[in-house]
Image 1 (tube, rainbow, N blue to C red):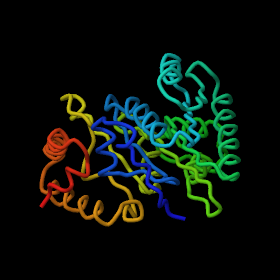
Image 2 (image 1 turned 30 degrees about the vertical axis):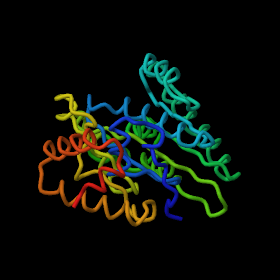
Image 3 (image 1 turned 180 degrees about the horizontal axis):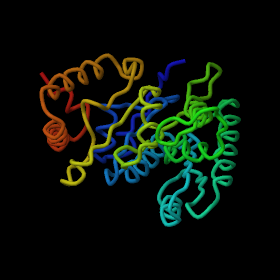
Length: 275
């Protein structure tokens, strides 16, 4: 089933980043979302804000945060900052430990969703999960960048597990994927996953460097079948917003959106103002 129950982040956070997410790339229960993240574009802050907003909107949603091959200080920071159950393997641990951790967490999450719970998983990052599985893959050929032809099977299955279940539960997955790292392998992993989600949020390094937040690309971010999440009035307002921002470049459009959010204290008022 397509996600049709909107998690309206604005109700749980007044932060402009969460308001922008509601407008441009809304999250529903069962969303399979990619956060496309160049270095230093603020992905960690985004993940924390999303987790806290989701908890504020619906504390019954069971949250897991899977951190693969992460710096130990980042793991500690996540544990202190968000209301999710943290499953983490730090960069000083073995590939085997990374792999086992991801498998175990997924098994637990699938059981919870199957029993009727709404499960929300934040994964940082899909790139590193794929790199870990590349160490264990036994495909017959190696693709360019040193990626084994079978390395993507399990990461793809992991990401593909996000869905709304007909008998009540749901599994939402938001996964970061790294771009512009200078690594050929990372680029191939990104190309393999591009378009496989039903929501994509593209972070924008140049805006982050200029301290314009939320640092995201308006035109490239979006959710498929957003009409199943929004009310007809909200949907019409979002279409008007998109049309107003469409002629602008990446930097101008995010500047214009942040200006609108500063002017109107909530998204309903912002959308109502558009002609």
